[in-house]
Length: 385
Image (cartoon, rainbow, N blue to C red):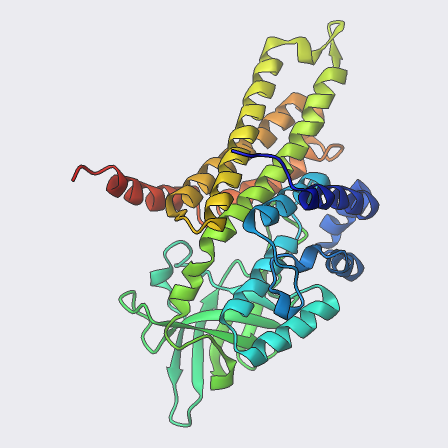
């Protein structure tokens, strides 16, 4: 197996490091966390540098690349930034629209994206009673005699839902019961009558605020539908495997930043006349941290390589997401422990990284759901004929 980077990938890594050094110092990151927003200038600079165009089809003005390269982009940016940024979410949202939207909808959304670097819409998928269990979604649209539809329901964990002017909503067609798997996607203006929001307050990932959304007899028209009627559930599932890979890549980059800081600190912090890196317990922590990072990295790029070669990754992506998210959180936690009291202050970034990563054991499918997905498939894989 060839683990070397291509010349283009090497150039990408160097460009990311330069961009982050110029635009994302710790003071700017702390300001973004305090303001719960990233500046419009920085978001546009990311797009203008070409990073925000990677993975988008050439006919839409993007820069096509393989999935391994997207993984490198995501990991390295998180590594050099040392925080969770909205760029991954922005790219995934635009890919959803390009995959499922009509030519007019894609043109409308891409125009805004190319001008601002931000999608024009948030993603309204999860509900209080239907996070991992999408079949239990209860938001529903009912067709009216005049050909319009009434949308009723509630969405939660809507990232930047109070920021973007539209929301891409998934709702069941006609019947809200769990037995109904027919759902549709709708692009809904946030200022539509009957749509309201309420902020949610997270312990981490402060750059990207969450909110809840409420839909009370929101009137929809057929031109607001995204994709084919009844295929929203299938569309919802289509990109989950790639999303889980890139979430893990983001985890890996942030965890590597925590490792960088903690390992260097261990060689500098003196106790009893010697650096703490000479203590066997600290060496054990560093060893286990590095093992987790290398294992996650190997699993990540093997899974992305398989996707690039049209191999099934249904098991791989679930195993990767569970192992990677859990162990990257452990790396950040051990980094904090190495810093001891100093790590529990805001004087270092390892505490912030830990809080950011802890959310990734939930986002994109909880650890427990990853066991459910992988476990069922593993039982079939190893069953005796």
